[in-house]
Image (tube, rainbow, N blue to C red; front, side, top):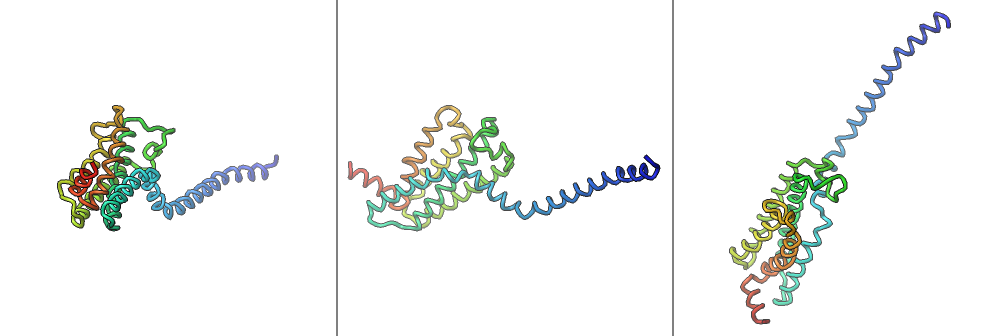
Length: 218
């Protein structure tokens, strides 16, 4: 190997790392430029996924049943109250799902093979889940106040049913944590059974008329 070949080889070896660094820097820059456009869409999708929307049929079904029973009893149905009832129940249901996600993760129950990996895979941060849950509970309370303003349901009756459902959605995994003491199914059965049906029915016809109707049938 002559001196000229040796000099050329050393020159190529010295230039190669710089070329690699330029390529890596260019790839990183291209990746950074591609990231921002999809960030907000990914965040919105993450929030929707955390709500577990596939479970919302458990809320909509009893609302539809309660409203149908009210229509059968009264022969009329207020569409606005029906939509308001559905949004209220869905808000509380979604908040309850977020509470479940937070406490299952905090207690180490969720793992890589769990159905809900929102926090395990760091799709959202725990504080994001908490804030979103508080927001949905607030939305539910606002909707409940609106239902009181436009329906004939007494405030004490509305508060009893609504906050009963809200408390159940939180205490399923938060606070007492009925899920962790083998009482979770009982809470779900009551909340998405008679309580949600009674709420939708009472908003349409008031609880007094509901009690009178039940007593007459008996």
